[in-house]
Length: 342
Ligand code: ZN
Image 1 (spheres, rainbow, N blue to C red):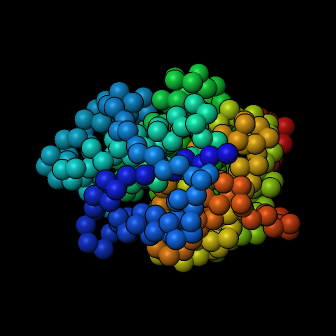
Image 2: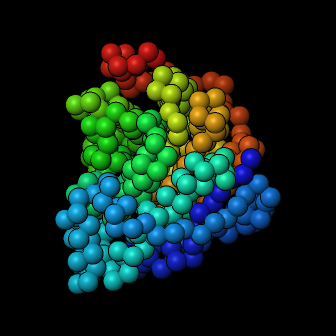
């Protein structure tokens, strides 16, 4: 069992400005902690270089005009939104981030690795078909999925997004697509950017029933996540029967995170990932691909990432045996009953 880690020092060149939380130090802290834990050099871990995505890859998930806009804004150093400046090297680095996700996905689907983690910057899950923002330019996980769907003839991909913010971009790209079941756990949009991600956003057209939002009230922590994983993630994956589980791995649901108000522990990320790895083993030959999204408290971000990689190599923590019954879980089980036997 090999875990591939996709990483390049070029990802450190993406700089958004002094004091910006989405800083190169995030990746430096992660890589340093993985090296200190021995995982980086471990025989069951392969660190591989990303190949950049092509413009054609990006245009599988984004409109041509939007891709041209990002390129153009970079030339004049303008911004997508107040927090998302586009510098001269941004376009190229955003191609390398999406390419990193594709590299990770290819490693898994070609059988070179059982699972893979793309440690990339910039993140992607706020980038929709024709818009960016929230530190995101191109949607790395969506570009990866669209590319792999064509290359490996995939018909069913489950996306779990546990970044503390709703992945409005990923939802936008796959909203009408029944080949991708998008499930997001996030802090309630009434209390956090981007203000979307409610339980009644269930998908549209052929994709109706394939978009599942689990908004959690501020201060939710390990017990709430355990309940969502056990009562929604496990039965939904079982019903959907994915050929691949893709994860938007954001670490800003940690209690220490400066941008959000959730309360996950670093250990929780380990058992959360163990749930994913076990579901993948029983449903799709263990195939899991992660792409890094947010997470802004450097030390806890690094330890939680180490726990996630431990779970990927099969040394994960047991999930807790008790969980709390949650109103949002009950509500979603009712809503989803018309689409899924869960
Ligand atoms: Zn986030």
